[in-house]
Image (cartoon, rainbow, N blue to C red):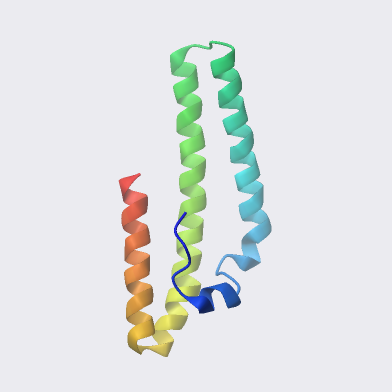
Length: 105
């Protein structure tokens, strides 16, 4: 996992803070899906059935990633843009790198 790049990121609540419970609920659901995948493999279930569940789990993770990205842009990047200067440029570059990582997956 990539380390936080800025000390202020540790001090201020993250952009998703107001939706933290919803994010955690989605992640717990995904955790259950992964356990279900393990069970399917342990039980030697049909490959296509396992792949279908892998796709559903992947979609769930992608939805969480999009939610976090949207909150980051709306909160962290927006605040940096208002502040201007190097902070704004750094946050935009950081967001661009995060988007690139998501697209590579």
